Length: 155
Ligand SMILES: Cc1ncc(C[n+]2csc(CCOP(=O)(O)OP(=O)(O)O)c2C)c(N)n1
Image 1 (tube, rainbow, N blue to C red):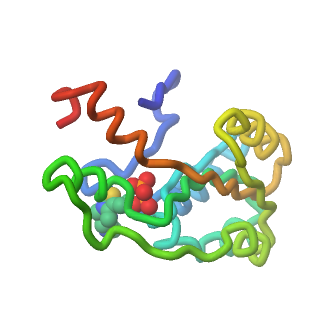
Image 2 (image 1 turned 30 degrees about the horizontal axis):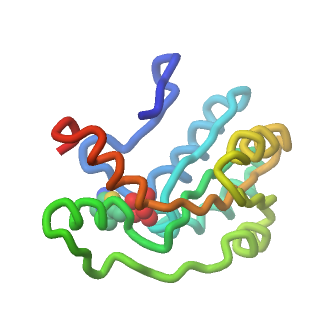
């Protein structure tokens, strides 16, 4: 659903779609293009696979923004399970307090409290010109509504 306006401005781990890609690749992108704004977007499960790289970003003083979708679970897997079996299994996990975690690495931390705030919080994070993590709670029930809306297009 993300619209790209310029070539090579949206980096994804195509093919194997490896989780944990967003933060390290944002670090690399910012090192190569220090004058561009770089935002890593990732789920909480994927983030926790490489969250130690916050240390790298801080040490190299790279002002990247990490937008973290938090649903305490493997949302995409739950979505597929619900579509296939109408029930889900082993997709929930606990999280640390991401704001505290980010701060302990020397990141700034912001939190989105409601959907309407997303853009202003993102703008604020970008304008800080520092390493920032945004904790954004999401309700993946929206996914099932999307499935209904798009029907066979995404199956
Ligand atoms: C290294 C790795 N392990 C497993 C998978 C399979 N997989 C794809 S999406 C997903 C869950 C992603 O959860 P999260 O990062 O929290 O994002 P959400 O779907 O909740 O937005 C899993 C386990 C993968 N793509 N990469």
